[in-house]
Image (cartoon, rainbow, N blue to C red; front, side, top):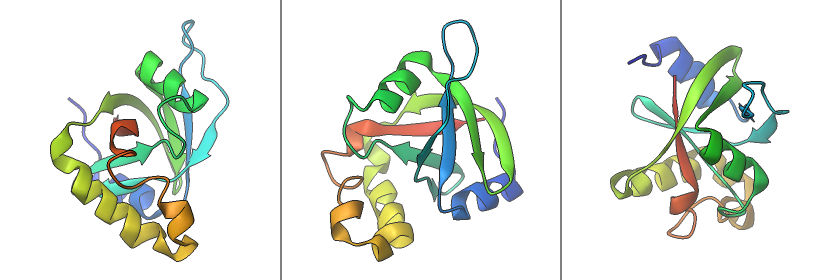
Length: 123
């Protein structure tokens, strides 16, 4: 299993936004979407701000793989659902990184309603 390097974790984890492309059935990449990304320990996570029916999330979850770009890092990744044990830490990471945008915006990616819409980025 491949892991993130310390440099990749730092560069992606501190980037304000991430470009995420999921793979089509033929292996080509879809156009990227811009989303927020957070780091918790040695993992990187993204959440769908508008629920599990958001088209980018549906495609990423269905394909299970894609490509990300942030902080000067380009990486092919897998997308994994996240178990329940990490959601409080992920919420805290979103608050620490993005609260300056205001509670209305951050509220779309934290809390129990956002938890099921979380994907771990696996290199």
